[in-house]
Image (tube, rainbow, N blue to C red; front, side, top):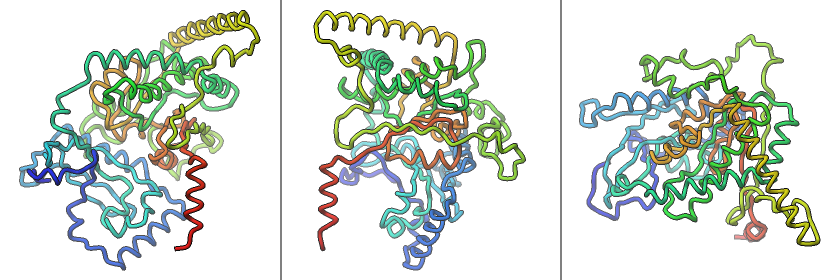
Amino acid sequence: MAPTDDPKEEPPYRFMIPLPREEQRLPPTPEACSCDLSKLLYHVYSGLPIFSRDMLQNIARQLECILRFPLNPQAPGGGPVVHIPDLRRDMVRWELETGAVTGGQSRVGEPHLQYCGIATLMRPGNIQNSPRIAMCPIRVAYSIQPILELWLGPSAAQEATAKETFKNEVSAWQRTRACKHLQSLFRGRRMPKITKIVAIGLPPIMRQPTHEMFVRPTKVHALIIAIRDVLLRCGHGYKKDQELPPPLYDQIKRGPPGPHGGGSEGDLPANSRSPSPDSTEDPTNTPGLPTVIRLWRERLYSQPIVDGPISPQEATPSSNSNDNAANSATSANDNNAQGDQARQNDSQGRMNCFVQNPLYSESDERFLAAVGITVVPDPWGFLEIDDTTLVISLDPLLPVREIVSDIAMPAVFLCNTATWPQRDVDIREWINSQQY
């Protein structure tokens, strides 16, 4: 991307997906579009996986190699390149453009991956508008950042506000009906032992400028700590004297350089690789289907993700103030006992908590590391998922469920579902009933 002085060429969005160079040499013909659509329909309706663990590992190794051994864009061989296979098994070449300056004094940020599920690939006009990348489920994207923003981090007041809000949200989560329901679910349902939590696509915390916008990012990250405490109380995780395994990203980074950077494929633990179809393992030892927990949230409505804290009146209805005061005192004692029990169990058990989002800043990484959450680069969060993992995905627009179902079988999947309000449903039904 060449620098430009025309501010009108500045993209009106903060994210962009530049087309590969081969796109200009492949004009969309009707025959090619029809053939690609037929291949896509066959791939979808045949139940073939769109994503694979080998694909993610290959892309992760390429990105790690580029970070460890950066190339000079002015060199004869060009700048760094990432090769990603599409559903036609053709290699799509992506030339990284990190550091280029666009109009309006903005800079192209670090590359990250954009995952396209079935809904995106089947979108009308996808093949006609971009035939070269229409069959590519993983694409390279960039964040567009103003140059001044690269040097300005959160203030001390914002960090203090985030820490205080996070502490309050963890306490609030432990008093919710949903937290108690999860605790009874984990104790009463037969499931494999959970050793780690992986959250994908949670919003960053330190990028929000005001206190009001701190609430939701801190709330969803406090959910990780609350669920971790529930799992430790139910006997999951590692014991205090056991050493937590390091992230796969650190294992590969410390290993000998491989063909794509980092350690060789044999350095990955056995539970991080997909089972071979020709494996002779006992079928009775294979894990069952994951436990799916849905959190319902209406679209366009400012409702909480789950029920709020249980008030004393809701816990034990009473008709006079004395009973209310007694109930309040009892509830406070129960909450204190829960907090003491949680701290006691935390000292007896340990569990890895990983989050993946390319928008995390260094301030986010420091803040999350202080509360026991490790930020892993994309796509290492997906590679961490195995049959002893609890996966959290609260963004219905991300195809996390499709990716996870293709590459792993986690123990528990905690997801969010956006529902349409009745008003929008009535409008859509009226529009569909009209004759054009």
